[in-house]
Image (cartoon, rainbow, N blue to C red):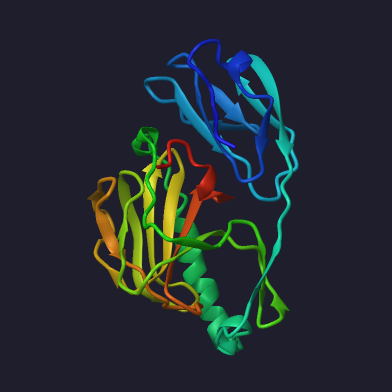
Length: 253
């Protein structure tokens, strides 16, 4: 479900609900103060602001614009179980030294998602980074080699090894590493206002940290590095630490 708020009396134009994993893009009067869940969010010069509801968000979500309050209920979704077999055992239940490495690497990725600036690169819509069969959906419970693990944090798109991966929207590269233990070739692309895309299991990385890229620009190539059983692109999307469903992004084409 894509939710967008028209630019007028902001609060009364807010939707009454948001889907789990959904992104809300709203507008209000420029210069307004907006709080979501008790925390301030950026408001652009044009009055734009954003927030999202995570996979397990129960709600309600309180949005305060100026002195006016509005409450959004959260629409629950069904989360099917995905069974993935043939995964290297050491990536499912790693030994202590590898587990420590994974923890360090994930901490670096989390830190990169904390970037919070006022660029509005997200405001021009999104395109698919690759075109292919969706082989894994956001939020589904993952069972690797019979062992239950965390829900899937993004969307998997099955494509041949080496398929060019394009930036879904403008942004700045905040993380680029070819060799993370679980996610292999990993790139984070920040779109502003705390929104970021991540691309995992890449076979090649064509960008560097700090580089500004434009929508449609090639950032790397699809692969099966890290914990993967076949070539694909994992596309994840976040509002800071809140994981969102790429399928629900506004303007995706």
